[in-house]
Image 1 (cartoon, rainbow over the protein chains, first blue to last red):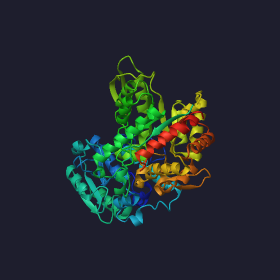
Image 2: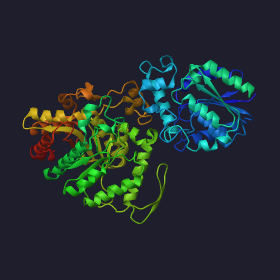
Image 3: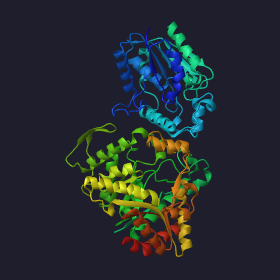
Image 4: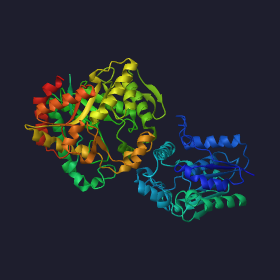
Length: 238
Length: 384
């Protein structure tokens, strides 16, 4: 059976556990942490999504993957797209959960909400369908947990500050990402709107767009089971 | 010998009444009236020009997208004052080089100012306040690295006099760096940097530059000065008191009450500093994870008094700020005594950065404040 490589998103990495458990049951699943997120500051020369893409292409080679499935959430979905446009020889399919990375709007519009410059409560509303249930309560968390949140934000900036969460030329090369692709999108995503996802699906050679109701930008957190099941169904069909 | 520098942020205080949520970053410029603004610019420039006759030096800075400071380009008042003054030294503290995308242009601006002023420029390089990340859109997670690369490039550009050199660094790319004019002061104008943390103080100590602690008071100032002294000593640099600067609010008057009233008005500068939506205080990676996490929980700006108790920056009275060592106020004799006591407590400094204007204080009061300070406090303070 082909392996699954999960590429995590920019925030709330640790909340992806239940999704990964269900997705990985009975499968070879790899879910590495990006440099920085793994607790070790990246080498100063390692700071772009390009670097992440080459690192994981190397990983597919090391694992001798033949028909890998890339599952990527948000930033991780962007990494998956960058991998696919470079070298799809080991990639059989992709399931992308609200990926970022492609600029679709004009220069005076933003595809992705300006999260770092929002109030905490507004950012939580933007990211989650049900922020009361899912957004971390910073006052109630211990210091180490809030530091982890601060570090995740730092690495998100490291990889995606400017241009903000996208590669201006990636859109030119999407025809190269010619593998069956499922785009799953939270119906309440305020960070990257579902309409962005639909337009991205239109730009990809072989993509299907599916809405996940009751989820914001991280369907694998808010609707872990439904999202994992949708990815598994896609895996078995594509 | 203590040097005193008058500092103003060229505030657009008439706009403050329109602003509820905050004074920075998101405020619309429609509240700015250019006619009122022009009068204010000329007024502040007049106050700086007066310093030349009062034996005071001049300090300017810059901020962006804010009604608290309309010096959005620090070298513009510097350029005007380079012509309008004759003896005052001109300190820019400073140029936010990690947020300026063209470092060679910074070298050119400083070099040109240094020549026009015939060698009176003091060249400040600052990381910039956290809320400056938003208007600059500079990546906060690599600001420190960009700051030091800009520093290295600017210094090399100002001290290379035999034609172009190549620079292909991580953040700056020029194949032909060749700055004209070369600066008046050799090898380059003195370098100043501001510090907030012991870590950055230590790094600057290894360079031997002047460090300025801004409103850090009795509790925090000795910590950053100490870190500087230690690293300077390890590097073999003799860090005399001329390496240390301290920025404070000063109000003097014929009576204690008058001096305190003036300081109270100027302190609206301090009280408006935290009037910014909290998220602008902690852009990701600007500070290490520990302090950032503390600000995610609460972005309240607390000022510590000498006795260790604290108060909210936006609520402090003149007495609170005096107890913290952030403001010195009263008669000239009282201010001399307060500065002397503070300097002794923090280990000594030879640059007193005096905010002699701020908030709603009138031009007449500002002139009286600067003049009385110069005539009756400066002679004693210079000897400290």
